[in-house]
Structure formats: structure tokens, C-alpha cells
Amino acid sequence: MKAAKTAPETFVRPIHLVIALIFLLFSAGCSLFIKPDITKMNSLERIPVSKYPLFKDNGDFNDLIAGIDGSLAYLSRIPAEREFYFNEDIYTAGHLKNSLLVFRNKVAEKPVPMDLNRFIRENYLLYRSVGSNGRGEMLFTGYYEPAIKGRLEKSPGYPYPVYASPNDLTTIDLSLFGDDFKGKKIIGRHTGRTVVPYYDRSEIDHTGILDGHSEILAWVGDPIDLFFLQIQGSGKIILESGNYINVHYHTINGHPYRSIGRMLIDEGKIAREEMSMQKIRSYLKEHPEEVERVLNYNPSYVFFKLEDDGPIGYIQVKLTPVRSIALDRKIFPPAALAYIETQKPELDRFGEIYQWQPLSTFVLNQDTGGAIKGPGRADVFWGNGHYAEVAAGHMQHPGKLYFLVLNPDTL
Image (cartoon, rainbow, N blue to C red):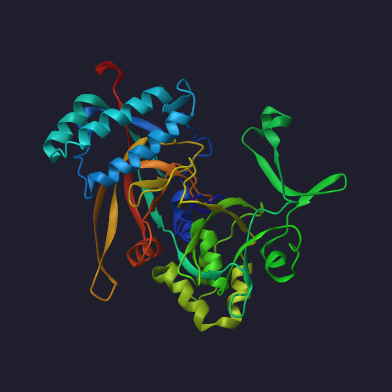
């Protein structure tokens, strides 16, 4: 799950995992239009067949099948009668599972676009996100799985710890104390007869306050790499032997996320139109005296756990590049089949973006992120490698989001 992207800070997520947290500053204009009363009962609107988009898919159907299988695994683990809201329409987990199985069987036939569109119109209901403005406008960002060099033991050149969840960190579910606190929780540490906020980033990174309280999963050589690992919510630590370990978002310290990208824009250090993860990295590499101050501006901190495979999304299934997305888990149905229309970058022979092309593809809602809030935000998981890093670092594009559900009347 991506982090922030901080629960995942997705991101995750996963805080999964976007880059969602950094580009929260770009969604601020959209968020001004988000109604505070958006819930899972009004985040979607049902679309008549006459207004269905022309469904296209730029990707490999084998990847889509892999993504569907992940969602099926999740739906098979939960009670079949569990209910999910699509606007005011309610469908059970069993029905969502059947929706995915029927769609999976169809795409396994490798249908041509005309056949697939006819199949969807005859068999599926369509729900569109109301978006940030009530008319379906979405902001799409991206996240990826970083791979950074590290060691299992502290050694010269690798002084920065990757922490597991501390043993003195406490999470309190406030909903247990009354309906007024439904959906709310606090994270802190227990001291005597009270609970106080947990340590912030500066305290954790510069005072050794976690000594004896947190297992260290690995050591890395660059604090900037570690910061962005937390932003993404999961990644691979490449060891000297060539082997690697998968680290995945576990929890956070409970402090609010603050965007270092927004701070650098406000200070005039980076122009708004130039902002990207890559630009932030370049600025910090060129101004090493600024690294500590800039990173500490974000008090939120992500703690990791080890996974046999990865990256793993919020619904505890392996994410599939371009087929897995992160959405607000409070208002959108998990594991559900969706369709997005946005843009993707095209790279030149030097690995740089030279243009953006339309991206239309079927996806699965498999992750979430602390910065992915409201019906107008979505985060696309791009995978790993150079292309994924570039796409995740620069994506901040408008688009549309639709959910597909098998029409009960066709059964």
C-alpha cells in the first residue's frame, strides 16, 4: 500500500503508496470544490447506457487478468454478503466477485474493441465518480516501487535506518468511544496515565529516540532515497549480494503530512510548473545543506514491515502495473473493476518525456493513500524501473473514473 501516499504516504500506497503526497499541492485547487459531505453513498453517479464512453484499452489483457485475479483473491477472503455502495445501489461481495469473473472470462477471449463495448453495454451498469467539481473531473497522479541500495547491518556509507513499527506506538480507535468519532483514530504513545503524540520526523531521524523501541529492517545510504521510499509506501532494498528484501508500509507516526513540494514552491526554490519528484531530488542534491530542513518540514513518518513479495496494496494483494490504482478507501468500493481516461508519458531515446498520450484502460481499486482524499483524486501504480519512476514523478493530469458492475437483471 502506498504511503501518505501517509497511510500509505501509496501508497499506498499503501501511504501504497502518488507522487501523490508531493502533488497534493496540485490538487489543492480541486479540493476547494469537494463537498465535506461526500460519502460512499454519493461519490458515484449512475450513467445511462447512452452516455457510456467508448471503452478502449491500451494495455495487455494478460496484465488485466492478473489484476482481476488479485481482486478476486480479496473478495474470496471476505464474507460473500458484505455490502458495497455504488451511489445508493448496494451490491454484495459475492456479486462483485461474479462481476469480475464474467469480465475476466470475456477479456480472456481477447475481444476486439467493438465486441467488448457491445458486451459491456449489454451486461454492465456504469457509475462515474462525481469528481472534484460534481461533473466527474479527476486529478490523476502516479506512484511506483523504488529500488534502493542497502545493507542488513549498519556500515560505512549506509547510516540511515529503515524502521519497523515501534513497540511503544499506540493506535486508538476513537469510534469505540461514541458515534461522534466514527471512522476516527489517533496514533501516539502511552506514557503513564495518558497518551501523547508520537515522535515526529526530526526526533526520529536525529536523536536516536527509537533505539530499543524499533527493529531496523535495513540500512540505506541516502536520506532522500529513504524519504521517497516512505512517500511511495513500499519498495525493494537491493543488498550487496544482489538479493533484495521487500519493505512495505505498516503504519505511520500519526503526524499530518506536509508537502515539501509545496514548501519549495512557496519559498521560490522551484517553479510550480516545473514541480516533480525529479526536480525536488535535483534541488536537494544541489543544496545538501538544505536536506535536513526540507525533509523535516514533513513531520509524518512511515514505518515498514517485510513482505515475501510486493508491492502489496491496501486490500493485501500484489499490485499490477497500470492495472492497480489507489483511491479514497472511505468512499469507493475496494477491489472493484474500474475504467480510467487520463494521460501517460512517452519517453525519447534519452529516457526523457517528449509528449503525453491518452491513457484509457481498465483498472482495479486495490490501494489507498493518505493524500488520496475525496472523489476527485486517483493514483496510478506504474510498477518499477525508469519509466515507472518518470511517469510517477511527473503525472498530474485530469481524467475520468468509472466503475463497472454486472447488471443483476442480466443474471
